[in-house]
Length: 314
Length: 274
Image (cartoon, rainbow over all chains, first blue to last red; front, side, top):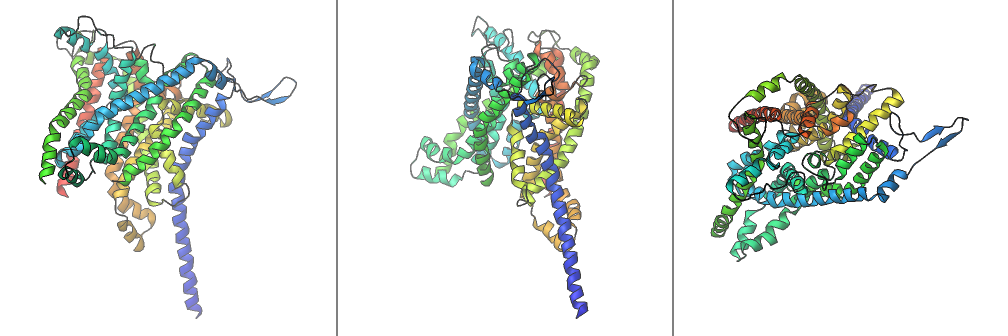
């Protein structure tokens, strides 16, 4: 009797020990990356908020703390909303926000217009060709972003490849001024972000059931109608996910407007860079970052939602 | 059936044209970089005959070479740490979905993928400055802070790559081994790891590339004395087109094409065997 109950307790104890070990293991597996992301990804946002509410100063670091002690030992907490007031008051910042919204929206639409037919064609290609065709879309992404933007400098310059070719062909007799205009920014952004649009589109389009289109065709629907009633609605999660994958990072883009844009292509990312590196106004740069973050919350939630749908459908 | 073939025949010509134009758009700029890297003239746009002189100058450019070496070191270390952390995160997201912290981890992993780099860079710099103020670490900014910053956004990409592989993998093998009494750690190293190994390699390469390529985040978190390759390229490119950068671009493109071809061939062979 005692031996039996001892056996049960023994088994229970070892089971418990095992369970605890598994638990501890799981805690480590989850805890280590979780902690890293909290420290290096979430915590920094609090510092952005803190610095954006500080006063700028001619010091290193170039801002004053909230808690200050005066000469007579009086401790005071100073929170400065002046940076946000400046963003509100000075139209420069509002026009940078509008500029970013405009570039991000137009480029998202351009990416969709170019990317949709490409994704559709790849999805309808013979099975053995799909992977290579998709690889060809991803391949440029593996080469340097900076260098791909640089390539357009050589093409769009006043004496660049495009102008030389058009002059030689006799299409134009004056070189086109494309470089350092918004047009150059649109071209560069569309070029750099096109793969991000194609991949989720392909993911939804490749799973479109051809039987639906066959049925529609048999019932007399023309291709245009088939597209509007079947293909487009079915691919909508991919469209939205792709659009957000382009829109969100472009809102803060710095390299492209800096290298290809001109005075008329004012964007938030470039302005933030200027405030930070050239004017050394860290509080205003932080306030700009905070505003951009708030603007991006809705697109991010949209992305989360539709990304899940793209994956669900896989 | 006749409807489908009719549909296909009608839709394909213009679709293929659109696809072809898309590829021209994607590859014409890259080709132009390669062609003009062999141009004799300093003016990138005027063809003055074939020459490899810019490659020679590139390899004598001490500043660029040391920046490239720093970038390779940073990318290799950051990618390795990112693969370890990203694999743990992917295990959490796929296998321990109900674990405390899994949901918040899902959001924290998705956000860096789209977060504008400029926010990431600024926020990390402010973090490093404040940490140095509070606990005295990191004492100086440079290679170490760039690595930490790169790990943060690279691990998000690694997580996505490993996660998709884990999700497709049958969990019953792992469960069977557990039922037979294998410890979780042993199960991971003998069963899970070999099966997700290709995604770890892919994730490492992706992380390495992203780290090598990053200009914005590194510009914020770097300190004096730590100049990465994109920083050198950027400051040179700002002044206008330069044939040396074309030569550098051609070398990078060549490495990528060779690496992707080898990976593609290996995947093709593996697929054939199965």
